[in-house]
Length: 151
Image (cartoon, rainbow, N blue to C red; front, side, top):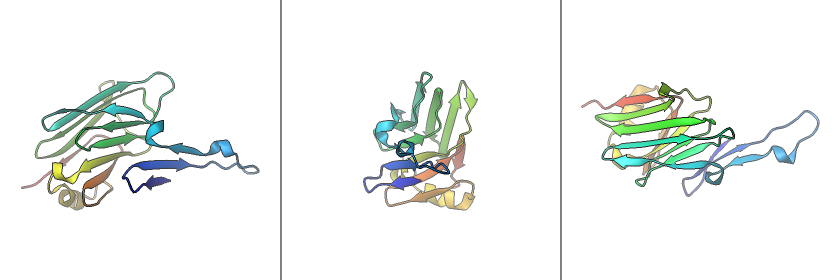
């Protein structure tokens, strides 16, 4: 279960049940404290980050100073994220130079001020699940994606 908190952070709650006994140790809450935080470096209209983890991989949250967040629940040893704006939104997610497909969707939180009109373009495509509030668009990603804006 995904929970969106009032402070716009998200928590994942997973509860496992066995047929005869419910174990208290089976409650796992994924918060920002449980995730490896990776800074997204800004270069004009692009954001880049790369991370390598050892055998005990953690979920990750990529964050930029201007409010972009990408939460990756899949446990990946190596991941590179490249987000850039050029007549639309382009998101490239790779591992060892190969495109990644997630089992659980990654959650992208993008400030609406960065790409005016992005929500209208998303509503025309029907290819991605998303929702928006006054300040952010939240997009579920299973892989790299390009959202072209038409003029």
